[in-house]
Picture 1 (cartoon, one colour):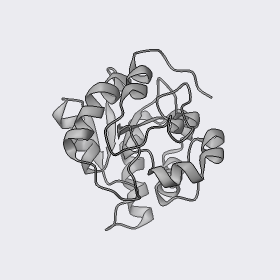
Picture 2 (cartoon, rainbow, N blue to C red; picture 1 turned 180 degrees about the vertical axis):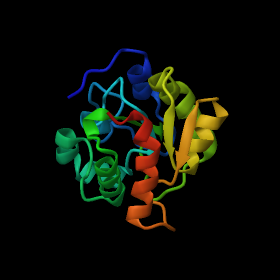
Picture 3 (spheres, rainbow, N blue to C red; picture 1 turned 90 degrees about the horizontal axis):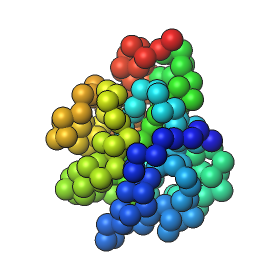
Picture 4 (cartoon, rainbow, N blue to C red; picture 1 turned 135 degrees about the horizontal axis):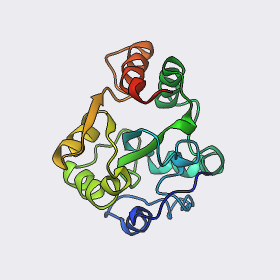
Length: 182
């Protein structure tokens, strides 16, 4: 597990509980980090990738044991694309800091979260995690939040988005990561 500087983001994430959405506390994933994803991708000095949200509530509940160990689900399309992008960029998950624009768990997979809630979460939590680093926004919602809060970023397709092949999405993410590769 990667230790993170205390910038108030963890406390803010624990306090963020919008009506109709589960929290990491609710599903037994309240670790001492903003997101369980940071078990694998929690480098406080690495490039910041911002996703839409972590997972939906049912997926988080049913996979809590694996998520407490790895922080992510390797077989998900999102993670397969990210792994491929990292391979192209010559990087590893440990080189990154991954967080989310929305820090609660929607009630079902692919639920749309109102942009006002995404921005509330981003303002309370995500922008504090980013600090003075530039970000790579994975998808429209993350890019919209970065733009709204004047966070320098590169916008790329979300790894789970339709319309491009896995190879195309991975290449775009790898290109955005290229300035950060060793």
